[in-house]
Length: 346
Image (cartoon, rainbow, N blue to C red; front, side, top):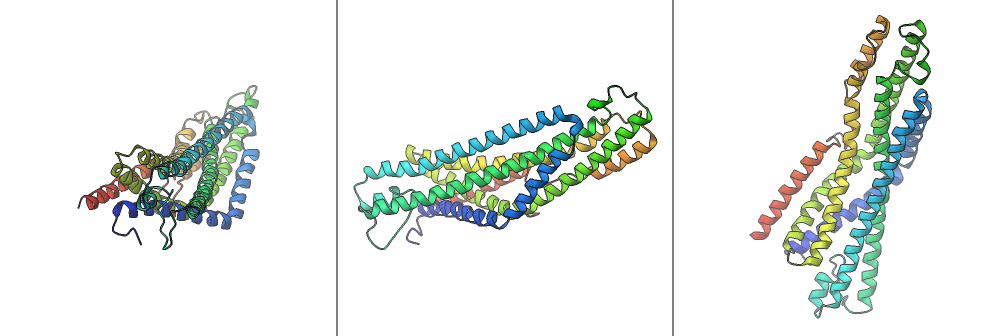
């Protein structure tokens, strides 16, 4: 309340408060849904072990690339989190050395704007408050990087299961053990029907995993998207208002890029699930069904009808987690940024 009326300081506080509040909310939400998350992980592992054993080489290639992508994204998140944290912690300490007034140290000498009724800008109280703020930001950064990296990995693995399902559907008549089986023979017919049943069961299990993942991520992602809109518009506003100050521009620029990257990766990987599920009808149509029996064609048509409904990861049913949603969120962030600029100019 001390900074009420100063739009720059109030925006700065809103940026930090919303992000830290979201980190605390995500921590407790993850604690509450831990058993459900473990159940989801076990289901994904079971699908990996049960389905598609006839395509061992392709399975290893697809899920090996998936594991590599998940590791790369997790490392990127940790690196970006560390860089943002250091920019917020180190730059104020450097600037505080050049401050010769209390007002200067209040506005630029802390990682986040704080105010107390007692004298808090003189040693050793200043150092103690600085350390407490740094510790709070550190734990908030750890919560963000660890939980987001974990959920990104889950989304990536679900997308990999759908990618492998597309491969299985396309190659129902060309498994490794069919090299010596004549095309159109009863044995080949039985193998194709058995693989189609396996694909149907696999698709049902993936559908349940997507629904469970949506129920777990839904409340968190809805709050995260709303928070990201606030932080992106606020960070962009603060960065442009302090554009003459390279230090603050680096601080808020890194925070802005980290927030955009965080929202973009969720939407990007969520869109992979939607895209791979939409490919299923084409994959089924691309299988070698022309030489199959009428009974197999009828069963394949039933699978085609079932696969017409795409699997969508949603944020509490309010919106899909997709690339189109990312563009809408960025558009909303820009609208709030323009509103802040207009209020500041007035």
